[in-house]
Image (cartoon, rainbow, N blue to C red; front, side, top):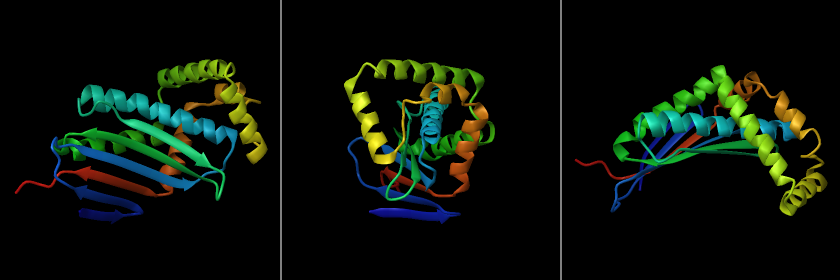
Length: 196
């Protein structure tokens, strides 16, 4: 049952409620917008989602004890049009959902204003470069890159390391800010009915 719909400045909140044996709130936040499809933007999306994973683990899971984890994921598409989707999802106690949603929004806005810390940026770079070297040993990685090259013309191997090393906190800050500026956010909440 559609309990609550709220639309403000391009942001949509849809809340659904149904009886559950174990009361739980499942929240999915989706940001969408226009974004040029290229190697650099795909890398920036990876940096942003990994930054958010680190921050949400610290702020939501460890400090608040509100969830086992918050998952951030993102994707750029080339066709039918160049666009992006950023998804943030987690589960929590229904009584905590509004408070935790506020923290999640606040932390994303903080990244869009300040970018990641130097420590987080370095940690992500090291991880991505290690993963890149490991992936080069896998046939699936090369098949995926060949498919990408022949379907979009983008070479995900050439300049990959140089692009990773050139990314700055300011680049990630600007990328996040550009997503938020587009004002396309949908939050879907599945929760339990309010007790009367």
